[in-house]
Length: 289
Length: 325
View (cartoon, rainbow over the protein chains, first blue to last red):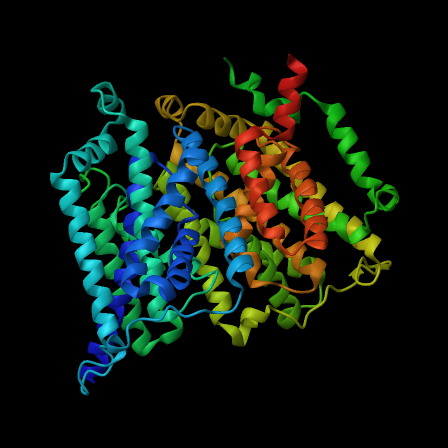
């Protein structure tokens, strides 16, 4: 019985780590530029497929680093060409445009790599369970959680202590003043967008190694990421982090007794938060960290 | 600037000619459409999805509040009407009313939570809540048919007492039945928009803070507009289920919400008839593109991008501005 709970909590944390990685990217872009990026799931899938194509030549470790960078590069181009035109406009337009982009990404991945699922091959030693008692903890799962933990820590340290990170946090609170102080806000936003897309690409590679690749793989993670942001509170990255882990564990625990309600529980959680604390756990007034 | 002269109300209130033209075109549709390569069922789809887009626009264009999750209430209307016909009644109008009630009441409950937020946050909450019903329809397959959708029901002939109208096998009769429902809903919408209540919504759209200073209970009005728009879109959903004799879980998905929003924006969300025009163009384009290429999704995606970058005011907005110059 204890094993069952342990198993589900571990599962929930792993799933939650994905939500966190994806939601942090969304949150970065939303906080600084006011853009809800519907195409985030598409970027995630593309990151995974890049890894699939690159693994035979540069190996898993190379792909783990190169594919998110390539995805970020794609994000940079898209930001320069399209997203930039949406800054300062009604959120309606950014929603519609990124929604259209999501369609194009999904269709193009299907066109290039095919509709069937593809694997990202991970080094064989990571596929083994670590112990016979806790069979569900494979090396790869531990590795995924480790990577997410390291990346999230680096992100928070970067935002807290680096010059660019401080500019991002300051511009989130007051873009006009930061611009007036001589910071190139256009470049800052481009960098910030690419950083968010980098996180999406990284989640894509990690998810591909565990679950395989499908053109629609990002869509299933998109809604939980939205909920993580709403539960945690728009404007707070700490909130997003906790929100992601919270809904991951909540839905995994629910699946012990009511497997059919494991998705619904996230929405119940969101409804409760909105009732009790409309701005989310760490909402709005909180700084970025 | 007085509220009465706001641009959004012009098309509805000051252009009776446009309204007469639209109604004439709709009434005669089964007769002129075949010449343009259309067919009656396509016309019925335009009418139903046009009603859905106009319902969404009641909120988006006339209250200034963006819901990106309206497919949920559309789909609830569809499942409600379908389930009612399957298990409860063999009266088509009653099933339609039950579907409308289901979607509208769900909108009233969730709306009370949603209106607590504004702006980007509001849009995100509507999207997320919209997905609840998709998952429910998807997972509760014993009732809803799950991924395959709800089957096993059909619209029933209308019993008017003195005669029965066969809307099941006669496509034209069904078109006129849908047109009647459309006319009632759209008439009610126009009436609401002209009423002091509708003017208040426009005032909130134009300047929420000023409306609040005037003592208008803004949250209550936005909630009411949300609920009204949910009732109308649930009616459209019910009609859609009757049209296909089928309810699809994809009709509850947020991508369907996106379709409704793009219809409203493409046609012109500041004009009364804009969303209907947008729906007509979207449906015909989708029909055509998916018949010539397997990459139709990319083209539809491209359409979204083009509308946002080049026609953010929609076709009617674009034309109106053009004619003023």
